[in-house]
Length: 184
Image (cartoon, rainbow, N blue to C red; front, side, top):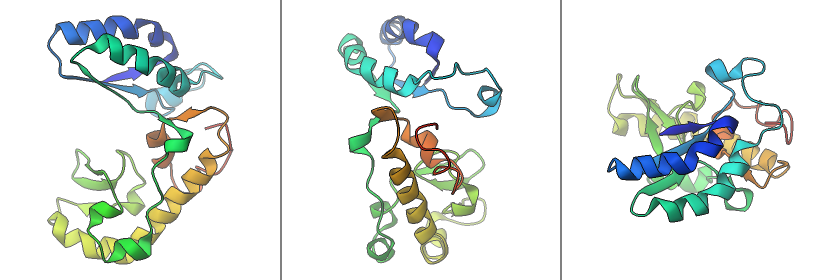
């Protein structure tokens, strides 16, 4: 996995060749997000839309990758995941509403992405099996998760770029995603 920064975009062809030559089976490219040290003022160049640049480069990089599977965490806005329907999902398997389900290093079961708001987590593997967490999650938090995803989708409809790192936007706390259209 490689975190793509504005300055590293020019090195992606080399990185693809290097990963392929080393026998890697997959190269995962993830646009830098303003979290951790990258949240510091000036850490990411203003106006640099790494997601759109990466999305535009990905088809070319994929041709260069040969047998190396290339995955980039960017989506065209017209391909955003559907908002789960809590009424339909309540009686269905959890995977019909939450796909993927992420197991974080501390055992937290997060909907969709690493770092999803903890208040909306499915459960914690340290306190029980997945099967024990599904019913309480559906009863107590599934509707809020669906509302959060709907809010992110609505926000991204006003995004100023044609591609977005959906993972970055959906992992933000509820309410933060709708704060500033086109700025996230």
